[in-house]
Image 1 (tube, rainbow, N blue to C red):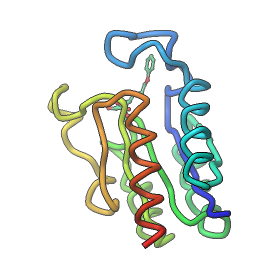
Image 2: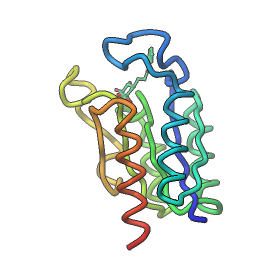
Image 3: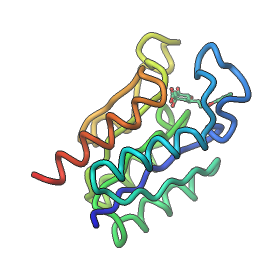
Length: 145
Ligand code: CA2
């Protein structure tokens, strides 16, 4: 079965506990369930992970090269700062779909720039947890050719 890594960055473990006006009421466990249900519907295996550490996210991307056909990545705030994550995406050569719960372009100017977007297959933002389901569908369709 085709396997997809869904990788989450810093502070996303707090989802559903703070800032519900921005990020909604769903917890990261709820997002995981939605991703697994979406994967099951499409015949895709989902490996769902989160880390608050930039290096651990780089390591997870490197490991994905051996284990997964593609990646759905919510790099959190590292989206706007991390050349290391961008370089890791380029290095592994897997298709990566960038995803965000919020519409980063409708928020503070410092969130408008993404280091990930230029090396991503595409980007989906602004639909809450549904952004993840849409990203898995898009990546699945891309992998199916
Ligand atoms: O909208 C997204 O998915 C973001 O990647 C979320 C990041 C933010 O830095 C990006 O600009 C956009 C922040 C994730 C932090 O999530 C929290 C959840 C609950 C309480 C506090 C933070």
